[in-house]
Amino acid sequence: MPRQALNLATLSKFDFGKADAAFRHCLQRAAQDVMDRPGDGSPRKVTLTATITPRIEQDGDVVGCNIAFLAHAQIPKYATAPTAAQLDRQGRVIFTPSEEEEPEPADD
Image (cartoon, rainbow, N blue to C red; front, side):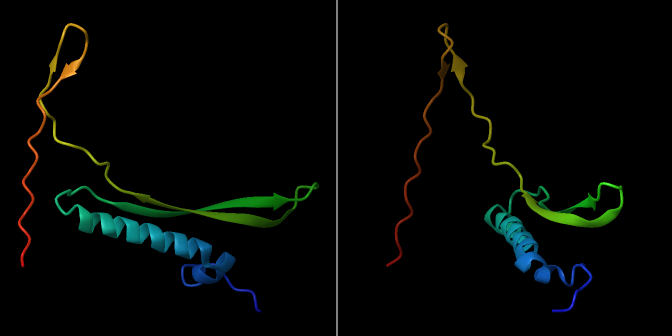
C-alpha cells in the first residue's frame, strides 16, 4: 500500500482508524449530552490532540517520529439546585425529605 500524508482526510486510515473512531465517539457523546440536557446552555467541547515525539538516533539525527492521538469530550458537570438544610449541635446535616412525584397515568 502506498504511503500517504497524514491529515484530516486520511485520519481514518491511520492506525486502523482508532483516532478517527475515538473522535467520532467523543463527538457523539457531546451531541447526546446536548440532547439529554437541553436546558444546560453550557458549551460542550471535543478535542483531538496529536502528540508528535521525535525518534532520534545516538548521533542526534532525527529518523522519524511517533504519533499518538488523544480524543476528549468535555461536557458540563451534573449539578443539583441548592436545597436548604440545618445543622444540629452534633454536626449533622438535617433536611426535609422531598415529596415524591406521583407517576403520570399511563395512556391506554
